[in-house]
Image (tube, rainbow, N blue to C red; front, side, top):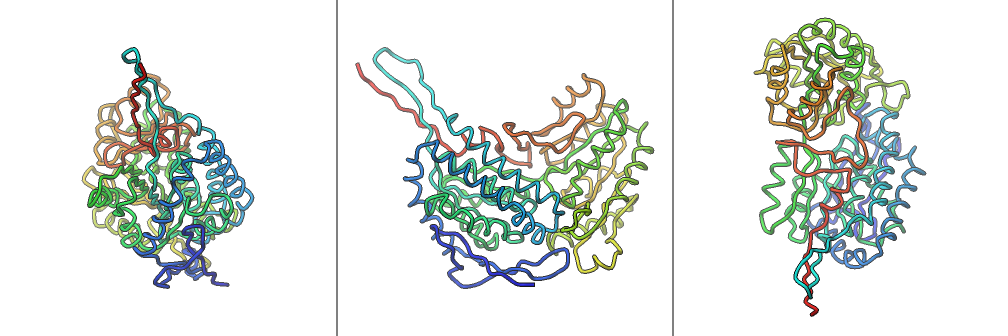
Length: 482
């Protein structure tokens, strides 16, 4: 297989790292090297920030509808190149082609949404004394640092730049060092869409490029998607030299709660879909804690286990594959370590907990969908985010018991409840400590609604107008004219 060399986008130019160092992109489904890309460092970040700072004034002065047209053009380019971009993510990330193809079109949808709300960035006029005019304007931050994770490489690379760009900022994007290739290909495709320096893409290790971006004094706005542990360190590091605005979309240990009056077929389907096994469970929104009323518990677990066992592990480029490979070696070892912890804790394994036996998959980082039943409150598997295809089940007695268990973790990203009783559904939606709640449904995101978490699951909301406005600051202007 040809090993291609990709380059970063800085100031409108494709370039290597100043040091000349590179990183390797390895296909997690078979262990094959398929690309190399720059191992950037602080000097490269400084170049990108300076390029963004120089490009910002003209981009801010660009008429809003022209900025929107640029986003629309980028969306069209992504759709046109969706087959190639999806296959890059399949090769780099290990998720099935069916899902990565959807990611490409979801990225375009996000860009088009943000283009559509460009004229909603409005100020206010404030009633005051006669002879005065008091009004507000929205002022972009200037240079925005956007750091994204490995689970949806293209969708995040393209979709997460939409809000800051439409608000008039220039962006420095740092993709995960584990899945940088589709972002770098995007950097090639944007030629001619944005003025040089408006969008910059710098690759490298989080401890080098990410830290330099977070701590750079000219980057006043940081947005990060990833783990709670790194999110907390970014909050601390961002305050090291200047005051910054930081938003965080972090992890989750999300509950799916099945009450005794639930439609059991729909709930089983929801438990299966909500775990995002088609991304190997590598999703902050995965409903990885299944709370089932004791009257349904035995039947529910048996039927769910049967559905999980039927999921097909296979090469991610195969259209028939349901679950692909874990994204990289360290994440694979993390998942397997939790399976070892489950054995040490004496948890009851219902299905999975192993690598698939197919010889064709022996060179890849595969883990079968895994289910543990009747997991105690003290278990690490119940309380810690695994970010893999591992689901734990807890039976409960009544509403108060379910709510207590559901809220008894540090996270609060999403939650799902299955019940046919309106009072139970609305009460649970009110009482659960989560930022995004589904009733008799799972996983779906709706453009224009704010996605984000409570507690250790983050700060801020995305995918709506609130996200766009978060990339601006309000300026009050008072005019005395009489």
